[in-house]
Image 1 (cartoon, rainbow, N blue to C red):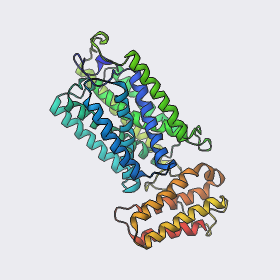
Image 2 (cartoon, helix red, strand yellow):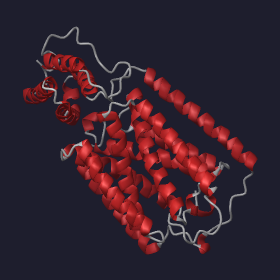
Image 3 (cartoon, rainbow, N blue to C red):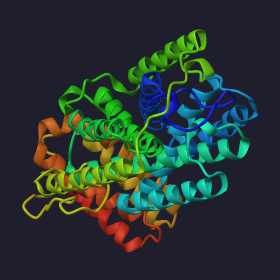
Image 4 (cartoon, rainbow, N blue to C red):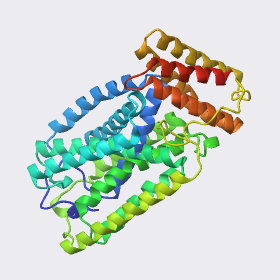
Length: 412
């Protein structure tokens, strides 16, 4: 999608860059580093989800204010805003899922509805959704609001897809990549350029996040084993190099000299390609449904079928018998601390403490699962049940205690 093919008229004052290959490359880079950098701060540094979200909300307000005060497109500020929005939108979705126990299918539906409302109000007010008409403050505010929601929606939809399919790193990259290719093909064949742009924009979020997970995940978990810190550094460096190049060459700046003739496609062709996009959506849904029906281990915290494995054939302590004793002792200590806080009525402290269990368990997943996959699945299911009980919007102390006690018994 090039400059004259998204939007109308001369756009000398647009505050959005030219939509070229450079735009999509740096957009995916920003999305990937947003995912890995947030994980590094939240989990590796142990800052915590809530504090990380609050920190980036403040940063977002400052960066977005800087961007809105500018009268023209400045690559560094624009892409800094995109990175921060990527991190913040992801964190908001994670809070709904991890802290408020909102099912991913619900958050996906809600964010999709919110995005539809944003687009509807934007269009009714401005009569265009073209990003190359961003020449007034109201249009820019609508644009950034839509970008924020697309990141949250892409996060929720991507995580929900992974939770029901059980796909791991590498494989999970293929679906959003294939859908983006289908969107580009539709655009080349005459689909509405603005619609194609926003579809691709939404899909770059799960693509970038899955790419980041693939690079950062351990090799035992079919990743490349770079880790979140190194992945963040590599992609930040790539973003910085690209921004420096764009600043020097102005290859992504819209001007009267680099506009080309508008595409000559009829409304009938656009309607035809709209049907094509509908078929692609149905096929993607069928693929996800088929994958969900296949046997696989749960990779998320939702209550999809099969999330909790039965322990009826395991004696107390048997599930962790093959795991390092130091790891089991750590898991038991955190679980016991959480149970103590629940019994003392310290619900907020219990939520904070059980996050440590989730972090430690996820960090050691590749090692433990390779040692004893069956036992890992058992414990993983019981940890999911404990997380759900403690993070419930209306927690029941009895349910919490039962889930935590069952986990303690299994750990031995």
